[in-house]
Length: 148
Image (cartoon, rainbow, N blue to C red):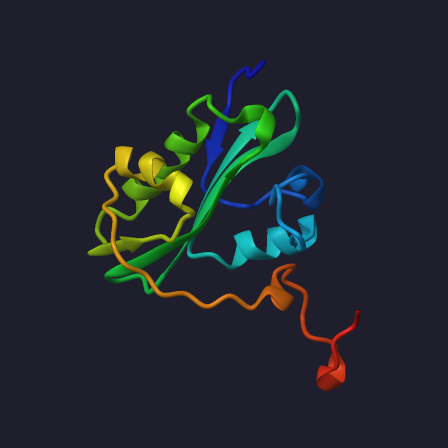
């Protein structure tokens, strides 16, 4: 099924059409256009591309102060490309890119903890706040009123 996957560290040349079908299971997923904005606004990105399909099939991004800390907010591989080592490769490439940082943090669902432990991450404690009304990445409507 998977031919050769190409890994790149820039969203240059990526179009919204190449980012379809990500954010699997999200009730209000970001659009491909918003996804591209996320990638462009990140300190670092690694993209897995299937050249024969002409699309991105996986990605990881990092936000960072550029000195000692970085956070990995998003890692996703399209369902048809999972369990092929793409997610592992994305994380390993990102960790290499961030090797000079003191702390590299992420928050994940409990079922993903073993995956990250195999890649050298340790369990810790985290606090988080989620504003689900902003999950799609769309700005608040003018005047502050929410649309239903």
